[in-house]
Structures are given as structure tokens and as C-alpha cells.
Length: 140
Image (cartoon, rainbow, N blue to C red; front, top):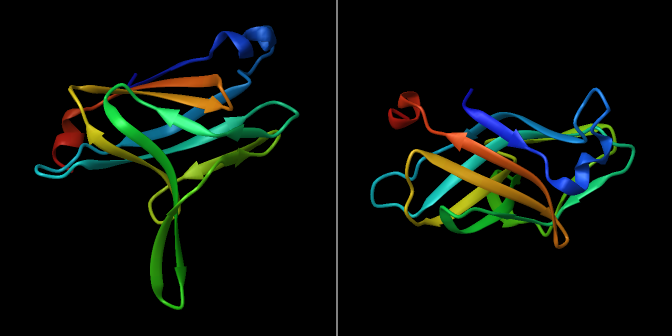
């Protein structure tokens, strides 16, 4: 399994529920191209709770900075901007994908075969995602 999901202690209250409170799927993180200092992350975040989830930050020990961005096209001109938060609706999902909302991972440090992302709501960690690069990632 390329992606391991660990739910943080604050969300383990719903442990007896058939679904975790927050889950991710379809994770893809691109490796920075040689000579480049940026990478991108794409995934689906699913909120299985009855309250909206505000993701206000993402951190990774493998990158100096991780930002949530959105690409929009207006009058044929593509623009990318940083989002202050990512709102995942109650009992809903948000897709981070090419050409839309996505993660920008900047200035890698000691990047090996895997990346850890920790998602925060305010000062509280809500989700940790561990992603391992495959040989397919090397050819992209």
C-alpha cells in the first residue's frame, strides 16, 4: 500500500464508527524535477463527520513549506493563488487535482523515497498522510 493514513488522537473519539472521521484517497505527490525546487500534491480529502472541517495548514518534514493553492482560468488566463484554508464540507469530499485546488510543496530537504504530510485545523493536527514514491513516479 503506497499510502498509510494515521488519524490523530483528537479524532479517535469516533473509533467505533465504521468509517474514520477524516480520510484521504487517490494520493499522488510529484517528485521535484532536477534543478527545480517545487513539487505538487493531489488527493481527495473526505470528511465523514457532521461538521465542516477547515484545513488551515499542511506541514512536511521533507519540504520547507507546503501551501494550499488553487488554479483558476479567467478570460483564458490561468492564475494560481494561495488559499488560506481548505473547507471540507460535512459528510463530503474535496478533490485536490491538476488545474484546480492542489498542494504546492516547496524547497525539498532530505527528500528520499517517501513524504509525510500533516494536515492542521487551527493549531490541531487532524490527519497525517505517508506517501511512498514508486518506480512509476521516477518516470513522470
